[in-house]
Length: 272
Image (cartoon, rainbow, N blue to C red):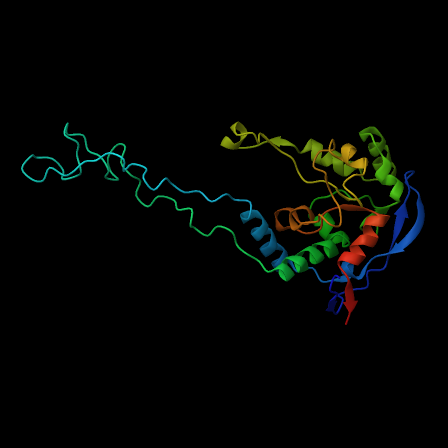
């Protein structure tokens, strides 16, 4: 059983319209209380830092690197530095010679991952969810939100998950008014500066719409994969890196109606 989070709400979440595949409003649904929580940017950025550092692989050196040649110092009287040498006079082992060991080499014991409490990470995800319902945060992130969409997040009917082709998905987004944000990500895709372009990450694409569906087996996921800058998730696979990329909350998000009800079950909030 999921334990409820008891806190005073910053605001009442209110109701948002439900769009069908024709772009028309067919119903209204009340947002769960999690969308009324205050946006804790400090907690979100700490959680993002923890998630990013958790992906870094520890790097070290072979303990015997540069130490596999047996040499000894010749001592004084040869007019040479007193570093370990082979019989032929070649210097070995010392940090300042060719083929020698590295001084202060990286250690795999170095602590890279900034750990975070589970409750703190959960609070960050809930806070990032609340930011998706605030238009000012979404606009500040750079998303294109048409004037007629005054209430966020965008909620669509469950038939949205049955879309199979990107062409059909584009038509739905055009009717709702969200296609301009996809175009923004496509137009601002650029070539990365620096050596990263030679290492398999040549292009940088801005983040666009986040689609939250009820299941990873939904056919619409194959259509979403072709949209630049777009991501998909389920209520069970939500993470702070998709909700607040770079530590900046307020991502433009599209929920299916069933996914929104699952959010209410997984992140219950009781008003204090």
